[in-house]
Amino acid sequence: MGRIADFGTPFESELIVRLSTQSANAEQPSLALTFDRRIKPRVPLIVLVTLIATVWPGVVLTDSLLRTYWTSYDFRTWMWYLPLTAPFVPLAMRSALKRSRASAEPAADELIARVAEITGGRLES
Image 1 (cartoon, helix red, strand yellow):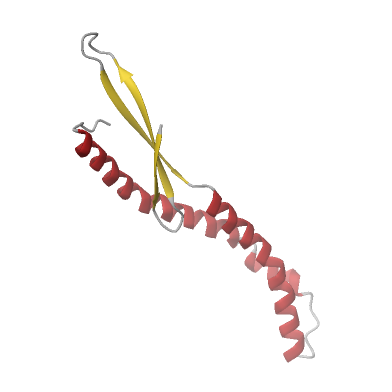
Image 2 (cartoon, one colour):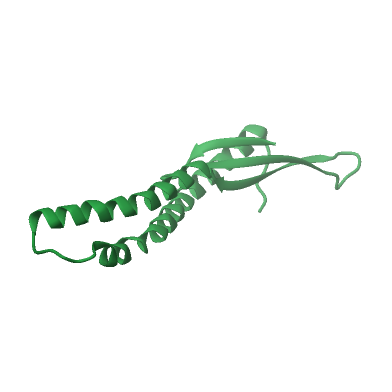
């Protein structure tokens, strides 16, 4: 098993390569490489935790700002701030993951073609 890493944006992906033997002909067994693409999980997890952790400090900061500049402001800021911000955390993550997959796919196809070229192999679906 091998790995080709660091392609795709905003989250990096890796291409996992597995070697297997295919014995269609007992006299001349052939080798096959199978490739599996996946996004490295560490950075998306860090981004998700950061997005979640920054929602509540935003409530405090916004409330402080509004009370400083408008002394007549007497609302519970969290009641309107959280519905305007919290639902977009999963949407932002979904969008970033979708963009990462979309950018990693052509790069992975190019890497697979390059491996086939170097090894003198052929591509099969």
